Length: 261
Image 1 (tube, helix red, strand yellow):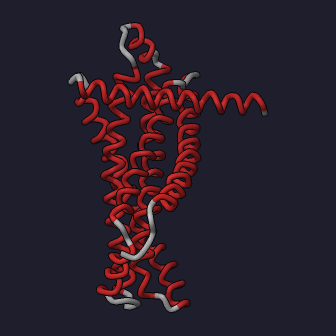
Image 2: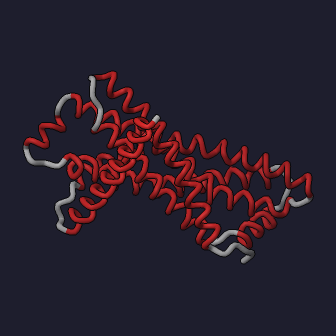
């Protein structure tokens, strides 16, 4: 038990160090105009290609489920006029960032981990170090920046898809008029809700990419070791993302006044 706790502390420290190094390389290399934009574009396109369609396909059912469940409760308590506010705020504050984070951790994170893990077991990472090239600067930093940009864009797409779906389900079903639905959303939602969603996307994208990169660079034992690293990266990412989501949400509720506009 003590040994496992010690390993957890060491892993957490290594993740923090790797994240700081990657962000530091991004800032310094961009300022000094030596950032690998080619690698960034390739990774951004790859991440978009593997995550865009699954994200949309998850966002639409999420909007349906949200509208059905909230609509049922609203009808029971006679508060159907507030369904637009609850749907919209729930999607912006929780749904969109979480769906994005799961896609980043599952689809993008596993791809990053397997790629870096394969490079590690083939000793390509060791070859870079021998040549005096930092793997974090050359491989991790462009992937981190690409994941942050893609996470921001995916959050917007998820928000639009889920809210449009919820709007169609509620208004199309005749439970509430379009004007009342939009009016309740506008009255209770705030611009900071969208800012919260994008901030969560940045944090979640950073966490998932750093975890995947750390596990990939630490892979050993051939193909089986790479597969184990991918599994560990996905599980650890989901756990850390859940914890970060609770912490950010609690801080937002305490710091940002909630009320009717």
